[in-house]
Amino acid sequence: MPTNSDPDFSSEKQPVKSSRAAKPTGKPQPEPEEGWKEIVKTIGLSLVLALGIRQFVAEARYIPSESMVPTLQINDRLIVEKVSYRFNDPERGDIVVFMPPDAAAKYCLGVQNANVRIKDAFIKRVVGLPGDKVEVKSGTVLINGQPLQESYIAEKPDYELPESVVPPNSYLVFGDNRNNSCDGHFWGPVPRENLIGRAAFRFWPPNRIGGITTRPTEGTALPATQPDAITTPEPPAAQPPAVPEAAPASPALPAEPQPAQP
Image 1 (cartoon, helix red, strand yellow):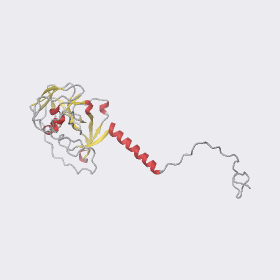
Image 2: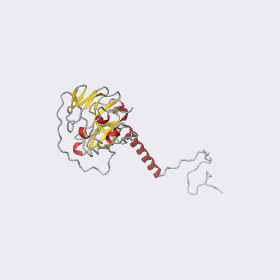
Image 3: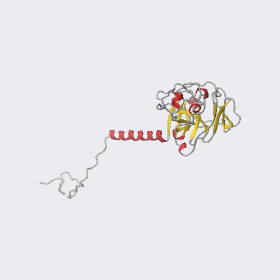
C-alpha cells in the first residue's frame, strides 16, 4: 500500500518528497514564549533600569519644610543628580542632599540617646569647604575672615558661631532660612561620604522651573532681603520622596560645632 513517504504517491499531484527520513537532532525545538512572559521581562527590565538610574544617576525629591526658604519653597520638586560628585568636589553654594551626621539627632530631634540616628535625608547649602575657617559674627558668615555675599537668605542669622576649621573631606552646610534651620551651626560639618547628590533642577511648580543653585562670593556682605510671596500650585497626587527635616529642639547654640563622626 502506498504511503505519504512514497515518492510516487500523488493523489492530487502533490510535490515529490524526499525518501530520506530527517535525522533526529536530539535537541527539543524551542517553543514560542507566551505573551505574559514577555510582559514580565519588559517590566523587570524597566524596574532594573529605573532603580539603577535612581541609585547612581538622579532622583526626584520634594521639599516638606521651610529650612531652605526663600530658595526652595514647601512642595517644590527637585531633580537631585548624583554623577558630578563622582568626578568633582562640591563647591561653595551647591545645594546638597545628604544624610546628617549622628550628632544631628541631639539638636534636630531633641534626643539624648547616642544610638538614635536620623534616617531621613536633609537638604542644605554648602558654606564651608575643607580647610576653611568659618565664623558667624554680627549676622554675617565669614570665610577665612572675609564676609560672604548672600542675597538668597531669608534673613541674617541671629546667632554667633565661633571660628572653626572645616575638617578634610567634610563640608559645613547651612539652610538659607538661617534662623529656622537645624543645620551645621548646631551639629558641625558633614563628611563627604554622607553626600547623596546635588540639587540641580526644579521641575515643579511650573512658574519656577529651572536651575536653583546660586553661588555666593567672598566680599562685602549684602543685606538679606525678604522675597515676595510665591504661590505654590496644588502638588500632583503622586509625590517623589521627601527631604524631611525636624525643627531644632532648642534655640540654644553649642559653644562650638560638634565634630562629625567619621
